[in-house]
Length: 246
Image 1 (cartoon, one colour):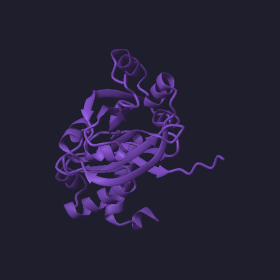
Image 2 (cartoon, one colour):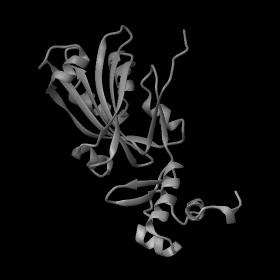
Image 3 (cartoon, one colour):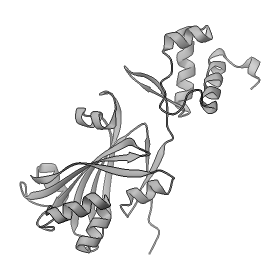
């Protein structure tokens, strides 16, 4: 479209888009307030909001209610496939990944955990909760539950030390227990972030997240993990991948 024939809001969007591409506004930067931008472009706030909405739909901006408008980072694609390969998937896209261990302890299985692990209510399980980071930005909080009847020394000091060093559950299960880590089922839903997760993910309380509940098994089909992962909805794109191998 000829620039002269473009609606005013589209011209504003084009200018902001150029500013982002040229680095005037960089990833994570907060744009000036609506009032200041409206004054800058000599338009009313309704017209400005149309421009912001256009760039939001393009994935260039994100709007955090109560906080402001920010330059959005590139979306991270994570395949929900047969293998649980979080680190490999993200590193394959050029992201530097690491986990921050938040909690590791023994707890009794509540109703959801007992159902997921196919065990009796109240049986002991190991809980591991971690903050996932990509290029040092928090993108997920994951809580995994493991049956201590199957892994009786899971929380032994030497195993906790190994786990802290390697940061990979799949590697830990394979090397310490000779146990494969295979995804049996995953249920994904949208939820409003809870206060604790909002803190770790640096999100406002009204922000939606993607919640993934997974049941993982070993090479013999026995359930070894029930996991609940909360992903930043503005940063993560989950897709389901069919395993075509025979």
